[in-house]
Length: 589
Ligand code: ARG
Image (cartoon, rainbow, N blue to C red; front, side, top):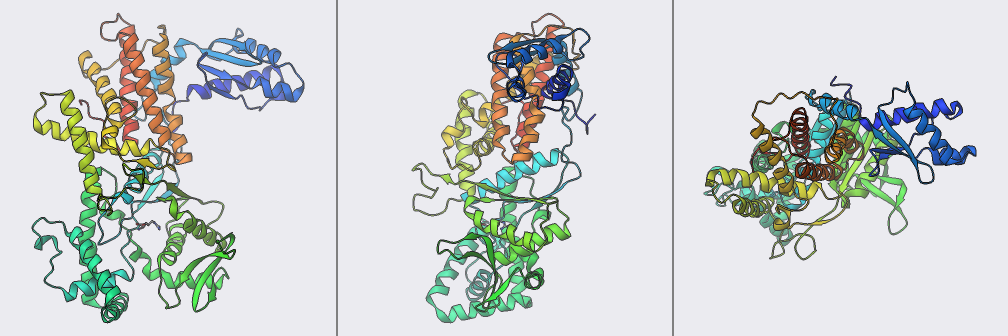
């Protein structure tokens, strides 16, 4: 059942309407049944209007014919009522029994009836990608959270995911840093030499000092340049320092990943340095193919499609005039490697929108080089900026970059206050654990529920509110579902009586639950997790209405069992959906 999945009710209705169209007007076979959810009935078909127009029929007549066909004796469509309305709409209500049996089918499947729609695809997701010797800051939050959610969604749909953490671990800045460290042995930066153990923050300061020295002291600048050459030529002590710096930084990134609960592991670190041995070859190939050209000693790729503000073609720097390679070179070698060596079917790059032009040019070059063909899809998954309370890009009060760890601390502190307020008797250790899950979940939900391309304001109080569209609200809704199930007595094996009638609030919730797979597949196509976030919020609200109007535990059989089944499917769907967003769903909050 798993790979095929349980058909969504919407698909069942669409198939029934298609069949009806073919029966009443064989010449219209294959027309779009135009079915969607409706607040007048379960579903609505708007097929009659455009079809009637095209074939000179009266829309109302055609809708009437379809309605008759759908409810005719001998029809296999699970339709209880089909009522033409307005200028040619068709309102369709399903039988109670088909709604119940879908609930039962989804409950019986560990995958909730969702097919592995992306099976057989290899998808490389480039995300997080912090820079070595620098602390992760607010700018790395969105890529890490969004990339992680997409990895979870596409992975759940059966794709083979390559998580590519494209660390900034290479470049001329390391010559400067290593040289500075070498000349200042008195300044500690190794975890073992530090009292508080924050190596990357020490490195970050040393890096800033190195840059200042580089700019102020030409002799130091020369020694730094020589260090870059030493690093590139594999000089042993230089490479050893570099390795140590990378390892210390990776430890710090790992601490953030652990706290965020993202899927990234040390195996996923494939930094820029990984592509270093491939750069020269890549540039040669681009020159041979006539994609890149020599220009003033450099090797560049001039765009066929994009022009800069001066009217000249926008340019990628494949090799600099000093013979060095930079960010552009690395991304060219990277895309080539991912397509030709990793055999990727789909490439995603999760970075902020400011890199849109860069990726547009890289994709264009890859296409011209013949690496990127029609069998490979590539997307720059762009996102907007996180804003501070003043509505400007988030900075510390002093105007510096905000450390990611500090941001998470703030959110967890806000969540702690909210949870403590709700549960005054909670022991401190439990409170800490729940606050951590709620705080981190709140940060992720605030991000993922915002349309990707939009900016949003980082506001810990608002993010952790119990009411409103927040992660905490959804976690709380899930905990409430769990509490009902606990009261019913676990382990719970409920059987669904498909002959029972279904109340309106129950039906609304059931139809929403049935939609889950469609939404998940939609996220995979559009790469927009906010669609899933929005769905989960609707689900939580539909559950609240159900809970307020349909008693569960005290209801007579078979109502009790059927409602418990609905609660169970709701809890599993909500927990699963939060899981795909990377958010914990604790059983108690
Ligand atoms: N390290 C870069 C940054 O911090 C992001 C790298 C994104 N990935 C890529 N393949 N260019 O901005």
